Length: 342
Image 1 (cartoon, rainbow, N blue to C red):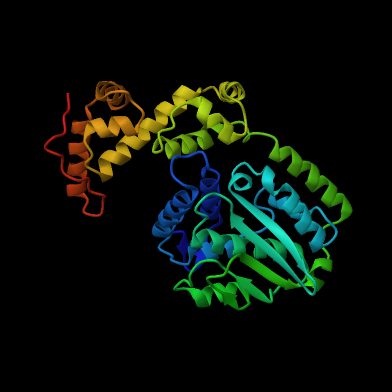
Image 2: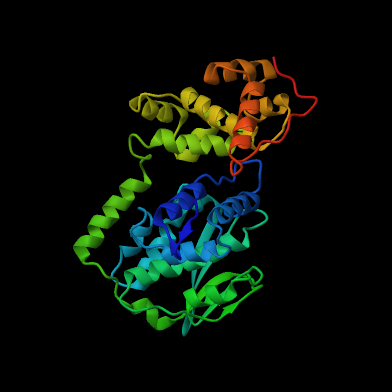
């Protein structure tokens, strides 16, 4: 499924990329830079769009999540930018791995973005952040904002012309910061909302920043989080719950309201991942068991029979037969001669 169809970027795929951003964690064994590179590599491959980071950034608008609505909490763009900076650190993920800064340079004002974790970020993340921020600002003001200059830490991408088309400004690469530079006059631009609307939006945003995902969606979000962190060796609720902004006991209570449990969601994550691994790889079963958090391969085999009523080897052979019938279907690698199945 392509993210870009007939030249249009779909909002539902942008929402998926944003959801994946919430799964990035500084507590993971993999560095944040590596997690971001993997996120964008997978998204670009799925979209078949090398310029995906800038296209998604261009699509963004202030109504897409609770935090960005804080940008409307001010009478002018300067106040809105200051509000966004004050609340940036309260975001569950971005607040832990990145920061923004507004710098007054006299006739010029600069908006900076950077990943604060060791190793920094990646080029695609910087491009997305810069285009997304500019889309925010354009979405809440009357004027069509055009930066005087744009600075990016990374190398110039192959789609440089597309990036400059979206930003409508000259871009300088291999710079010390990721920055949007404006004339100081833009700070006085009015924001398109009334005082009553700003007050209501502020209350809603405050509530959204302090509450978990709505009932019915928490298990789905938790499933994605577990599947991402299983690869890093994180299997327990004590490690996962803080990434949702709650204690293990609070997480369990919310899951009970959705008539499920952490163990049930973990089991589903292992089930889905096991099929994906068998479909696309040829790892020994002992290694698959370890990746899924089982202490030994026998426990993995028992769980697999419970899920599918057959052994991993039987399912793997069936997947290979399906690939033979459908040449377009993903074909799993042949079995290792050292693989064992009971």
